[in-house]
Length: 316
Image (cartoon, rainbow, N blue to C red; front, top):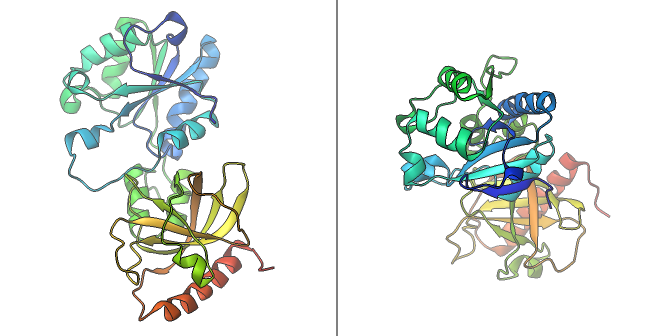
């Protein structure tokens, strides 16, 4: 459980929930570019002797404006809170992206939400941040509002890799959809992970010699369908090597909703209804439709051997 305090909303907050140095953005993924913005907020918080806060929005503005687009989330709220805690964040402000907020001008947002509602002492934004209806607010606009309303403003420079490419959530999604989890991890600063409750399936894998824990993808970005070497965290903190299929398992009829089916090596405990989190380490092969269960089982065993080799996990 994260120790970051999560506050939903921005209206009528008690004094103890106001007055932080804030990093503002959607922070889906909390990638290396986001981390630069949060570091600026943390630096300001230290000088002001106030908490470090992060502002994010729920639902994501993209979901609000384009509800029919494919799922694209990189994190669930609990994962986001844990990532923020590791960066020294004290408070996560989850602002409801509703018609009121969506229709605010940039001046209204700075005045009503940041100044009046959250009592911001400082606001850190990325170099490409925009805010207000029509995305009219810019980092320089924010700086002007800060001067007027009495809060400091810092602007994070663009964070790029050795090739000059910007670290971005879009690039992470593209990498995952193309089956390049190592590239996603490079931008994130850690592996992309799917978290969810283990659901009861047909238990076919157990009968075939490779019991799997099944987790639905929900509104995560859907990685390339196929087989991955994985490391999975259990609720008690143990981290287990494994191999997982992401997709709809076309060899078995009746599966329509994409899911992660992970075989945890050398593990035989009941974890139904528990929440696990699986890191995608390496893409091994695309999802295939086999001629039968025997052919599928032979390939799964080959996949497992390759995953063990990659993860440095020997069979007992």
